[in-house]
Length: 63
Image (cartoon, rainbow, N blue to C red; front, side):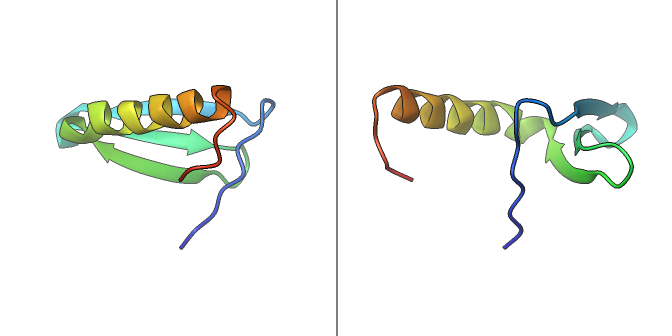
């Protein structure tokens, strides 16, 4: 498992890879960590982030 702590001041830059039908999401500057997401998985990732935000807003501690 790789754990990446994302903070409010961490640079996040999406880089579309149209030729591969993917997007790279780069975290950091000099030595970025990269999350590569297929186009078909973008909505699933978005839904997971929305679910996590809703759980935090509700005061939940569910993963």
